[in-house]
Amino acid sequence: MSSPLKVFITGASSGIGLALAAEYAQRGAILGLVARRGDALAAFQQSHPKNAVAVYAVDVRDAEALAEAAAQFIAQYGLPDVVIANAGISRGAVTGHGDLRTFREVMDINYFGMVATFEPFAAAMVAAKKGTLVGIASVASVRGLPGSGAYSASKSAALKYLEALRVEMRPQGVGVVTIAPGYIRTPMTDHNPYTMPFLMDADRFAVKVANAVERQTAFAVFPWQMRIVAMLLHVMPRWLYDRAFERAPRKPRAATE
Image (cartoon, rainbow, N blue to C red):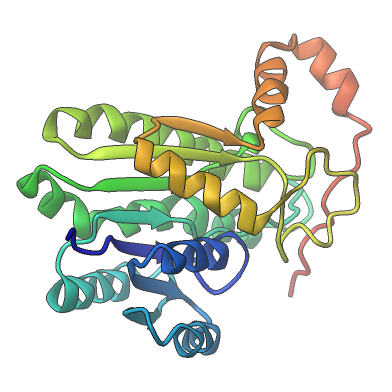
């Protein structure tokens, strides 16, 4: 009988992260869950008494606390088989409107938080020549979306980082999987003031992600229709892109102090 899968997930208190935690719990995995909202993590832990679930109320911007959570998980359960850097935020931000704090916060969580998530596990995985690092990027990384420059830039940075990491880790026996979601029904997308084509439920998305990780798919876009959209956007001439998107609806700016 094989031992249960060990999965460590950030941003696990809601949205995609919560759906991934539920999917892996259904598959009998041992879970390490990280999020800022410890109450939501505790609620998940209590609702899954048959699963081994360790929870850590940690902000991924705090690299030391994140490393301590990783060390605690390893000490209790051993090196995880899968680490999913999912923590992320999406906020409207516009240059020239005093949104520097928003730009920095989005980059710190979506990009540097991903690096900080993998850092405590990477060397041990290389030494063991096993394990999979999974990063949640976005279709929004393909082009700079007006009003979402902070989010597009952070996800583009994550996408390129994951690509470099995949090539670095491949000879070491460690897998790197990049997941680029389109529109997924979560609290983060609930208030988008525009049409979201091919909107996918988070639980269905989580099943597809877990299957892609199991297959060691290097790069996957869900829903599949958004892969075609991303390819078209990637090759669209700049002049056409500019004209098509300059009047596109935009995510509202985050409130500033």
